[in-house]
Image 1 (cartoon, rainbow, N blue to C red):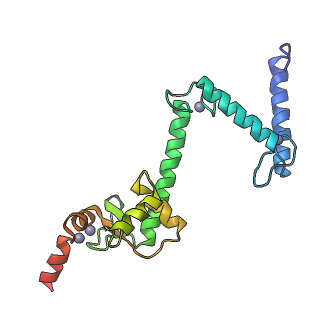
Image 2: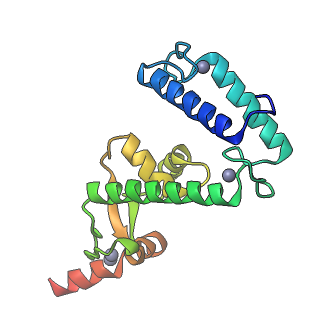
Image 3: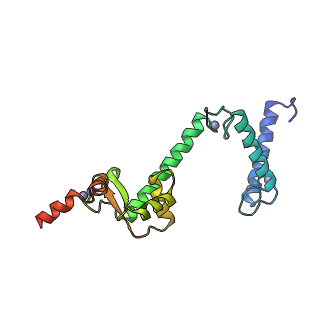
Length: 185
Ligand SMILES: [Zn+2]
Ligand SMILES: [Zn+2]
Ligand SMILES: [Zn+2]
Ligand SMILES: [Zn+2]
């Protein structure tokens, strides 16, 4: 836009553009008014432009979501990094809660039900099959098991255990609770 516009005129123009983009979006078009690509909200021209802008910002070390400079080694500024990590954490908690819910919400061995103590266990999960499964779930982190279970419709062969029982079974092959129950009955 030319330099000699007043701030007021610029603000009005921005409002007009925003209103026009909104109308286009509501009509199921790309905000520029072109038809969107299959399975996308934006047209291929706009997608290309956004991709180029993001690449340019990455090269310059600018946050890809605003004009602030990105944190060293990242593509986002501190504020946006925090915003996204909070959102991811919330999502991760929800996915985990759903998985625990699907498998009974309490330790299958001792009945512990405080969520902080609980983990999901692959029943009989010590052999090669278990390692293969974990590899499928994630090469990085076993906490992703909740995502995998959700995607696979919470299959059989998993249970909720508390960390205590899980470690006892993992290290000693059985939980002391089992022996205690056996002597009591
Ligand atoms: Zn467009
Ligand atoms: Zn930012
Ligand atoms: Zn337990
Ligand atoms: Zn136990």
